[in-house]
Amino acid sequence: MLSITVTLPAMAVPLALAAAGMLACLPAAASGQLTVPILAQESVAPKWIAGQAKPQGICADVLAAIENIDPRIRFVGHDRARSLAVIEDSLARGTVWGACALVDSPVRKHIAARVSVPLYEARYRLAAAAGDTEAVASLDDLARRKPLVNTPRGSGYIAELKSRGLEIDDSTGDSLTNLRKTIHGHGRYTYLNEPSMMYYIRTAGLEHKLTVLPAVFNPSYTYFWVSKRADPALAPAIEAALAKLKASGELARIYNRWTSLR
Image (cartoon, rainbow, N blue to C red; front, side):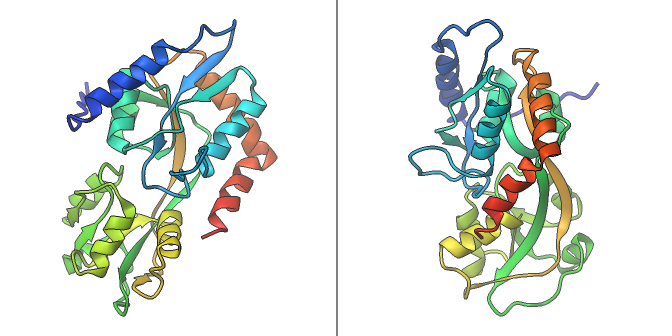
């Protein structure tokens, strides 16, 4: 049997305990109500946009749409953004019950149930310093060049990149910091999901300092994940709500609304 242990920085423990306190302090739910603790994710705009008076971004709108479809569901806690490592640890502990728009990974399958309705397709691109326009056709082509590649810590695709022999710097989860490393010559490329790459390049004014290469790598769907320690009624309720949102076209409208701003 596959056994996976999630090892996290020491800071994850007090944060997880704080989340547990939040869950314990929730008011008693009315019959059938599902109050769902969930955390926003740091440095992944426009999926989650931090620093606003209230949560914004693709996932914030998806959660609001789920609540409109199924009034029993109420999401709480996503006014706070945390690292992906803390989110995964909290899912494992059951101090949060859900996570929005994560790709498949062995760790996530071990700690949570994947709702089968995909939210949107994640597409990955390479950014290089301005003027570095040498084409890269595939990950195998990239590996043959043996570059140092910056990418956010904890990303679900890192194991695959390393398995191809790529040297990866995942020392930070901050996407903008990774892009700036590439500008300053630490790592030839930054590997990042396309919406976040375009968002941070635009908002930080880096259009003339970086080149986004045209190739798209490893398109893969993102999903909503439900902790295996959550109320058993939650996963089927989320599944039903997302199926309705997909059928109506609302999931696509939400994604397009935020990615068109890039």
